[in-house]
Length: 438
Image 1 (spheres, rainbow, N blue to C red):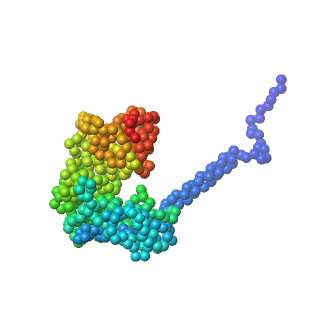
Image 2: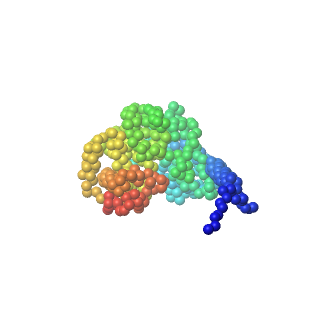
Image 3: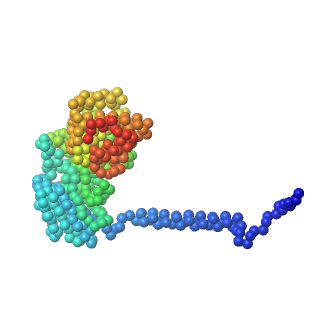
């Protein structure tokens, strides 16, 4: 048998071989180079993102209005400053019964029915008109009014709904200026702005314009700064609005509201008028109107205040036939937020829904553009059932809160189909609670 001699010394490397230590160093160099190249590309991308939109594509719109109690009008102007004809035209909905003397000195204005189309010149222009402030609802009660000492109206109406036709990538930078008789205060969702120019920015719209409630005149005003949010409650002097009660109610319920709607506006304006005005509540962007006689919590334990705050917080609107969804959600949360904030017990919460069910027993779940009374009550009951169904199907990992938050992300009017699809996606099958609904 041959004996093999084993040499414990390392064999010499082949001429083309690379020592392990050198190979390790080369790999480290390659990794470092790739890392720093990637970091550079990310930095360039981030720098581009932080530069924001192209400043050359910005056009400026200054919205101005002067409140005139002698005529009952607001004298309005919209001044457009642009370059390179960024804005080709702006179409407004301006019914003749409220918008008068529509004119411009140099641009073109075309009117077909309620539709007014303004075609500004290359560098812009000014559109002027007069707006009739007083307005009555179908029941004859006013929801907008001007007197010798105060005025209450919506900025949405003062500056009408508009659609701008622009070059691709163009965007608006808007400002607002309001004036009134000497001594008048002017409260808006943008703060107190009498005689000041404030910036208007609305990420939900391409054409920024002022929105929300406006109250001006000789006013009683209470302000509260709650966790960085500015809350203002205002009414004409002598109307005896219980502002301190409202502020206390908000401090009590806002934490529960913010759990569902963390992006609630940083500013909230709550306004009221005189007792002869419309006896209800109406929401607006960053603001709401509530008649001074409306209770914070009704006899059936729903809350008109929380109902309107749902609208302010969610900014959800229904598409054709889907208003039962939005109003049902608002009524459901008016009770549920009271429960979560400790305002009512579980027993009284269930009792309130039982009474709503009894009152609306003969009401069907149907498509509507204007849900009221019994239909809204019946819709709220459906929403409670849907919440329970989602929780059961997901083992409490999701709820109606989840569904609402998902719909809000869409940032578009909620349709019956979209609502059902979103609910069934969470449940993982058909929604029994929506059986018989559109």
